[in-house]
Image 1 (cartoon, rainbow, N blue to C red):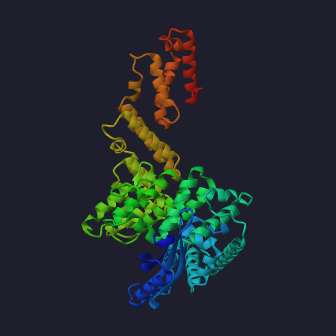
Image 2: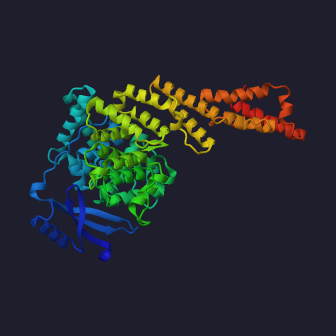
Image 3: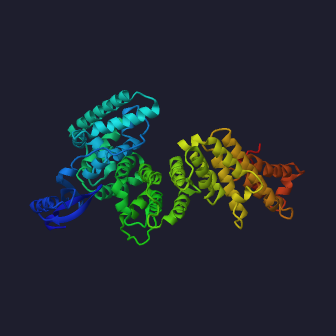
Length: 568
């Protein structure tokens, strides 16, 4: 930092983001340097940013001059081929999907000005600047209206007028909020304290005003990482309380993370797109590998925030970037085209997990679409082949089932529902099915719990009927086959052991959260019933306990287990 905690940065525009060129102690020197870069055609655009340190140690950046070469001054909307769901109420236009679309279609604008949708929608000055910029808003509105009208079967002109009406209402709302002088500031007490001071407002208005307060600080920062660091500090300060403050910070952070240049600069140099996507997936899960990164590495700090705080919008923004890159045409391994399929397998393995497909149905669909690039066939035939082959490349049968379930929640999945049903049936039935779902050499208990958990996931899944019932019934059958084949019941009900021990072990299988499936549970329950029906069961159960008081306690505990397991 230069004298007095004040400096002037000259930043140059590179394709879609700003890069620091030089730092000067005075504004005049910075402006002269920027002008020389433009006149020598060494930059598309330049800007001068005043950077000073507040009393509390926080950096504040203010853009004081921006200039582009004549040939690059024009801004236009980016091409998009999909639009969010049609917004039916004003709050919908502030939602995550709508804001992500704003970033995508206004990419050129948001990157040049380093401004997020949160700031544009909640700061009247930023919103007015966008509305006054060339014909960006009419072009963007027209494109989104056309896409939504086509998909929803609406009249394009009507939809365009609806969006314009919403824009006018949002503009007026931001203007009125900007005129208020009673809104709190984010001071040393943090963002949660500022939201508390808005407690008299209605919930939806309080959330809006909270973003207004947040945006007043964010618009002063004309650097993506300055915004990210600022929001990260607030999350660490207020994140433990969760609730509304954290949700508002999450939305603002998601808007920063979805900016095209942020992820690239955050991760640093990568060997290829495949490695970058794997790291982004790990980042979204809060599991980024430290590797050679230092303890103060910004990417690790973001990963830690995602690991310990409920930042679902930020997580979704990172995964949306992964999804769109998978659907794109850029190779996963540019340096070695022959390794493209191997790179795909690595990304697939990172995505198809025992916790389900990271990113859900849209990610599963993107993987199928990416794989279609390896195939000669296109259309329905190519999609069908890709679904079969992608699923086959997943090692564990349980993860295959999870992948196919997720895929049904996508457009491709809906188009190929019958193909997915056939593949699920083939996976879960037949003489070789069990080997796909249990791991040889693993403890019986682990395999049993894993199969039971899968049964529960399928039973609670969004699979349509009768597919869901068919698949869960097939997995129930696999559980029975495994229980019978491994003699689990016989091991637990060893006749040489005390009856109390035998009955208690069987009850552990019957207890909630262990065995859930109908057929498998019936086998164990029948063995318990056989014990209960034998003459003098209670006497035999406590025969090894001498103290009558302890005998009664043991019986009470056993009957309590019976009740919890559904025996009446």
